[in-house]
Structure formats: C-alpha cells, structure tokens
Length: 226
Image 1 (cartoon, one colour):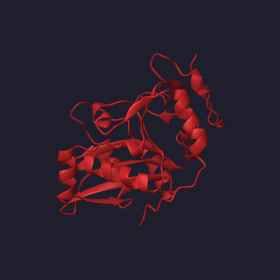
Image 2 (cartoon, helix red, strand yellow):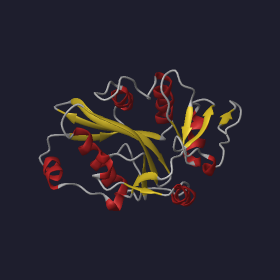
Image 3 (cartoon, one colour):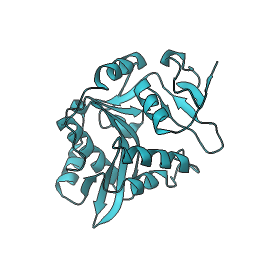
C-alpha cells in the first residue's frame, strides 16, 4: 500500500516500505515546504513527479552514488579542463541554473522541475542548503547543476549543458571540490551511463541509509562563496 502524506505530518514511512514496482516509490502527497524537503533528504528519499501528477517521493533500491575518491575523468576531458575554455563558479546564479535544468530536453516533452519545485529549491538556496555550480563561456552561462549539501553528503538533483562538455566540466570541478572539503558521498539517485562514466555505482538502499546516519550531522569544511 502506498502511503499518502498529510500536510501537517512531516514523517515518512520506513524506506523498506517503498514499492518494488515502480522501484522506490515510497509515498505521495504532502507539500514542498522546506521543512518537508529537508526531512525527506535526511530520511533518504526525494521528490520526483510530472505536471498533472500528485507529489511523489522516491527511495530506489539500489541507489546510485559517487564516492568522491572514486571519481574517474577521461584523458580527453581532463585536457579540455586544462585548456581553460570554461570558467566555473559556485552559488553565483542559482535561479538561472535551476531554470536551465528545467528547460526543454531533446528526449522529453515535459519537465519534473515544475515551477513550484523551482520555488522550493530557491528557498533552500536562500537558507544556505541548496547550491549551484555555474559553467561560463565568454561570460555566458552554458551549463551547470544544483543540489543540496547536508553534513558531509551532497544530494545531486539535475544538470544542463548548452555547450559540449560544459556540464561535465562543472561536475568534475564540483566533485573535486567536495572531496577537498571532506565530503564522503554524492547521491546521484538513479543510474545513467553519463554518471557511470565518472565512476558512479549502485549500492544497496540499506548501505545508503547507513551513510546518512553516519555523515548527515558531521560538519564539513565547505565554503561555497569563497
């Protein structure tokens, strides 16, 4: 049975209650308040739904993650980074990045980053929890990504690219910086060939939950504005 959340109740069902088909569907309903979103990430689930659908919460098993120390960068991409064609910044244009991520894709007619979703994550950014990575080319925003940083964990949400390799350069820069700041895990949610090429792999949901319990409340050395 799928659990329907009440607006005045921030509790989620146990992760093991998630459906096997579709994989990881844990609950429906509720809202996108910052209190509920933070409770969701700390619990091990995230929102993902399309316009016209109820708000859906997911905790897939297995979970795709990237350990910063396992980052793989191809020789060609490393060369591209050294060429200095792109400039990468953090937290300089969060709204523009999330709007870029919500833009049309060649493989999809819709977007799960709805207007209410954008507004909710902008609020989290203003609270210092959600962060953006911007990739610039000749002072034009050509790529980026965003996600949440809690403790020593980063929860990636989405990325976009308007120039070849732009989002890849942004992602590598972020992972290397997170590693230097002492982050231990990046949540990638679902597997893609793109992420797997960087070293992302699947772990059991139980292992992911254990990482949450161990590292969510550990301080990091992150300084996003520096």
